Image (cartoon, rainbow, N blue to C red; front, side, top):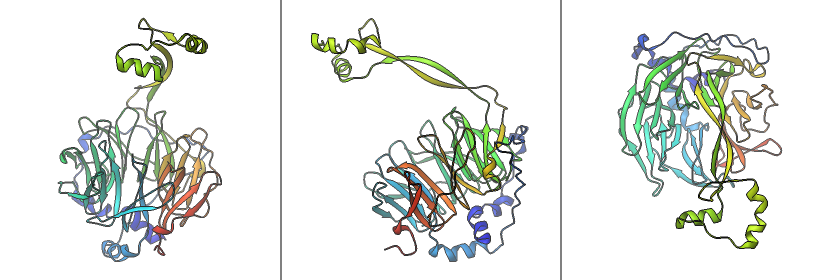
Length: 420
């Protein structure tokens, strides 16, 4: 697998380096990034070997026999989109039933995202495709991207679509299908991974570390280099404002200098009575018996002058404390592992896919359980937690799902060499 791994991860990114001139004037001074070990790691620098000139030809010859599942994306209708090197499919994540196989201009899927209108955007190695949720039809997008090889997609807080390619970034208005701007002088060139922090800033994983971008102006704010492993392959933002980074040398957690505080917010109590009263513009009178039954509940709420019951709720508020803070620590038990994908589940457990297995990580103390057994391959490429009551896993040899009671995997026969 050594040679194949080089083909998989780089995916024509390194050969474009000579075509892009970096604008060093946009990069600020690099903050100190010496990792503070979580479990006393001794990560050694990761060395990359240049790919052979014939890599593209070899890749094209082997793609027809390749069953890797590199992208998993749940949608708002309860389906799971499965992007592989054999094309695009939509399945029922509860039963595993294949609902549709979608024909694309290019079968190699690199990224999937759903916009606010429910349209599914698919990044392939030949550009973007858009799928209409009502008709299921595919529309190729003739947009002037920095490169047609799409590696990552993300919808920001305004609803705009960011497209990461192996030659930079593009920003698209998905409603109009218009290209708004590009970032082609991206430090590190290749936009391998995208995520938003809790303040709405865009973080881009590249061949040379991290780049922080202001989504409103598309201007580069910070550049982070000298990360263990150098190449950022996957990113995830935690609900409490930390950034998790996967590199070929391990899993890193970054403190971004974001301040957290708790505020108390008073809001109306939502129930059928207040809903009906709000719709009619007045409070619905309650019978005496009903008032008696709800006496205890009324004591727990505060009434405003309009007699609408309210309750107090705690809310975490984030603010930028120091925009230059960037402190790293490494998960010691994963030190030296090639981390390919990272996802949080609803319980805030981190699922970490590597080239040698799938692991659960406690984000607060770095404790790591054993690898999940019975996957089609130990080389994990994509994850979809909390989907159909399961954890769906894409590997280099097909698709599987993990039973969250037994933590054992079962392969999906429809995405393997012996599929029907």
